[in-house]
Amino acid sequence: MLSEFLLAEMSRLGAQDALPLHRQLYEALRRAMLEGKLGAGERLPSSRDLAQDLRLSRNTVVAAINQLGVEGYLASRVGSGTFVNDNVPRATPGRTPRHTGGQAATVQAARLSSRGQALASTFCATELEVQPFTPGIADFSAFPLTLWQRLQNKHWRMTYPDMLDYNTSGGYAPLRRAVADYLRVFRSVHLEADQVVITSGTQQSIELCARLLADHGDTVWVEDPAYWGAVKAFMATGLSLHPVPVDEEGIQPSTADNARPPRLIYVTPSHQYPTGAVMSLPRRHQLLATARAHDAWVLEDDYDSEYRFSGPPISSLEGLDTDGRVFYMGTFSKVLYPGLKIGYLVVPKPLVGAFKQAHYDLNRPGQMPVQAALAEFIEMGHFASALRRARQNYGERRQCLLEALKPVLRDTPEGPSISGAEQGLHLCLRLPAQVDDRALAQRIAQHGLTVRPLSAYCLQRTDLRGLVIGYGYAPLADIERCGPVLAAAVQQVLGSA
Image 1 (cartoon, helix red, strand yellow):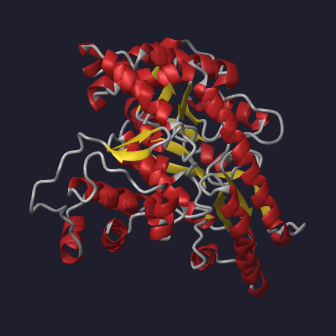
Image 2 (image 1 turned 30 degrees about the vertical axis):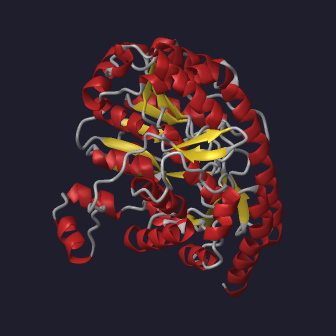
């Protein structure tokens, strides 16, 4: 029976690799197809039935099915359901995926370089299971998969040989124009389409900037607390991290910080990750002046800028730049789906040629038919429609979570209080300094919920305690059900602190 095979395979994967549930189901379904337990053309059970049989949330099931659909294993037929594609290959008999563990894993870890060991030891998203309130993850169950498959099929049929080769121009020209038009209107970025370089996402954009703008050992200022992905990217390129504290107005360099002149300054001004702080206008001007004084480059990761729920929209940092020293980067993963792996980097004009050449030399970019499909998706208005729907859905979830957390809040300097709720897909519940937020996060996990301790993101600071709580992944019904459970767990710990 399919459900029994899937449960057994997910149990094996969970024990060996500690994969999140949606990834376990993805791997189990993929293996079922490769081994013929789900034959070509066979209809998949509905997401509702699978969720019930496997005791998973429907959101988890939909996430796995959507990813398999995007990768071509499954095809949806309107009114009929989801079917295994006819061209899914079979695995070679007798061969099974190789897993190493125990002593073998220890031996392999010992062979890592010092930089590799540092990268492997830092906090990352794979340490936590994806459940209600997991931050940093959007809900892509509503993604118009059938429409997307139709656009992809269209551009694969129209593909000519040049579209199958590596790209040397920084990306598919119509997509670069579409991105430029969007950023010009909605984020007040000053740019021409030629300044847009299409990357595989924010991580690649950061690494490209680090490699081209700084030398090994140069100093990069990063926010403290910090986005772990950026920290790892800078570590991988051999830069020296200098954490700069963040307050409610964003990054706040001190005289001591200025004694460590930066080559790069990395910031998330629209919705600081993880505190949620929105950098104020005076602080933005101050940061640009500081960068000018040090002749430093500013890397603006416009994280979560698409979702603002209260207050006037704040234009990009790049839009205030008069020196051409800001590199602006973004991604489509929070509006469409993360497996799309398409982001963009806006490069100052004098450096466009160098960045396109380096991007080609280092990364051999491709995916031109997919980029063509995305360009048409944007040009036809589907991206704007998806963004409007997402804003409404996330706005409702945000409000529901805020209501659930009201009993926890205190009108005192020590808190608890909420920061970062005006924008983005997560908020931060700030807690008194005596609370062990890591132990609290573990206690909340016993209820089948995932939050992240704020202290886990700190590089040097020891004064911050809190919970980073996401509302993007969980459906509204889950937040309505689980919000009071989360609040009760926090109140219980506060009562004994």
